[in-house]
Length: 295
Ligand SMILES: NC(=O)c1ccc[n+]([C@@H]2O[C@H](COP(=O)([O-])OP(=O)(O)OC[C@H]3O[C@@H](n4cnc5c(N)ncnc54)[C@H](OP(=O)(O)O)[C@@H]3O)[C@@H](O)[C@H]2O)c1
Image 1 (tube, rainbow, N blue to C red):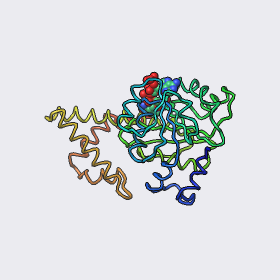
Image 2: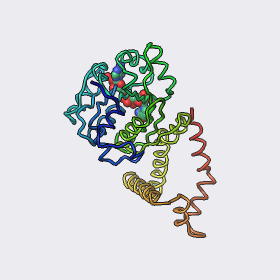
Image 3: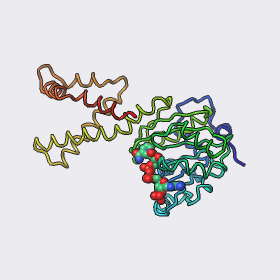
Image 4: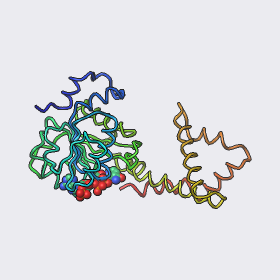
C-alpha cells in the first residue's frame, strides 16, 4: 500500500532532526525507498532520471513518454529504469511525480493523471517554465480533482552534467517531503528553496544565466583569437580561467572584489582592462540583461 514520503522518512534511518543538510548516504537511502515518476523523457526528464539512477540504486524510477526512442536510449544506459508509454502506470503509487513536459501540455497531462493521484500521499513537482503554483493547482481544479502538495522546480540546462542551479518553491508540502525533493535535486547540482515570488529573478539569474555566462565565454574567446590564440586554445584558456575564478570563490569567506584586488596591481594592466570594460558598459550591460530577462 502506498505510504507517503513522510512515512518513508520515519521508516528509514533518516531522522527528521537532521535538518536541511542531509548527508549523501541519507539522501540515497531515502531515495532508494521511493517510487519516483517522471512524466516526459525529453532533455529535462531524461537528465533527471540519469542523475537519480547514476547516484542511487533506486529500482523504482519510472519514466513515461509517448514515443519510444528516448525511453529505449535511457533503458540502454540504465536497465533498472522502468519505462512506459502510460503516464497512469508511471504515477501509480509514486511518492513523487515530476512533470517534465512542455508548459502547454501540463493541463492535458494533469487532466489525465489527476483522477489517479492521492492528494494526501503524493507530491507533484512541475518543471514547466513560466507556470506558477497557482497555474498548476488550477489544472487540478479544472480536472475536478483535489490539489496535491505542489512544488515548482526550476533547474538549468547544467542538470545534464550534474551541475544545475535548481530553485524550488513549494505549497502545502510537508517539511519532511520538501527535504526529500531538495535532496533529490541536490544529486544534480545545487538547490535553493525560495519563495515563489523570487522564481522569475531566479530564472533570469540561473536559467538564462547559463546563456549569459556563455556569452562572456564567447566574447573572451573572440578576444583571445584576436590576440593570437587558436579558437580551441582560447576556449580551453577561458574555460580554465573561469574554473579557477569559481574555485577561488568557493574558498571560505571569499568575495569577488577581494580576489579582483589580488590581481589589480596599482598602475598595472588589469585595472586598465577593467576600466576599459566598465567604460564600455560591462556591469551595466549584465544588469540590464538580467532585468530584461525577468518576466
Ligand atoms: N530545457 C531547459 O533548459 C529547461 C529548464 C527548466 C525547466 N524546463 C521545463 O522542463 C519542461 C521540459 O522541457 P524539456 O526541455 O525537457 O522538453 P522536451 O525535451 O521537449 O521534453 C518533453 C518530453 O515530453 C514528452 N511528452 C509530450 N507529450 C507528453 C505526454 N502527454 N505525456 C508524457 N510525455 C509527453 C515529449 O515526448 P515526444 O518527444 O515523444 O513528443 C518529450 O520527450 C518544460 O516545461 C520546460 O519549460 C526546461
